[in-house]
Image 1 (tube, one colour):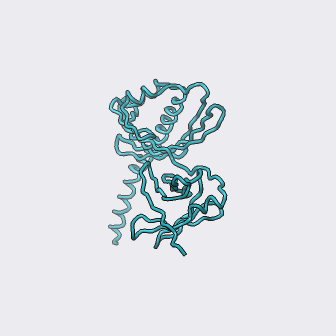
Image 2 (tube, rainbow, N blue to C red):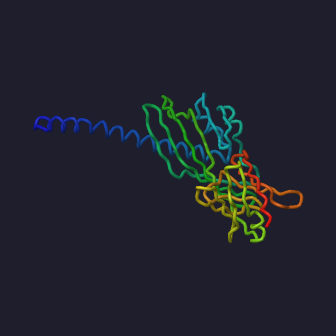
Image 3 (cartoon, one colour):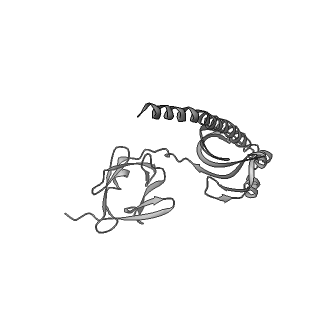
Length: 249
């Protein structure tokens, strides 16, 4: 690179610095403003403060709640009522990230909820993705999607004899087999060519793999109480494996 080229490159870099600084400042300002607004909205949920949500929701809002239900602004506001007697709760924003695209901001964040349900504590966590439009009247929420962050259920203790009733070979097709074995605290399940997976009992005959809260393995029994099949259930959809009879000796 020649001296002239180096000077030109330096000049371009120095000229770009103010624009970078302005962009960073705008992003920081938007992040601070939107985090405060989101927390204000969250704080208005327990008391059912419709006025706060009415202020920030765009009239053409599209929202998908944690149950997967799509809502308009009117439908969302209609559901916003105070917590019933016996319930007390609060929610706080944990992580919060914003990306600016002109006058549109996309925010992704997590919320931690603490609920006292008639004297019993519940802790739930949610993840939200918001799209905000900056208008002459300020920020307005034009889209939101909320998802509950799933977690493993508590495992129970089953007698080894009960666990070992599930042992055996199970078939999905004539070419796809799975071997189930009992272990000290649960079951192991292994398909040919795949690593063995550990499953813990949630209730009798219902098992889950730690770190995979979306699915369950359910053992089905006949009228005599013998295990006859295994159901792999995910989001209400079942795949059934048939237990093979042991070969006679």
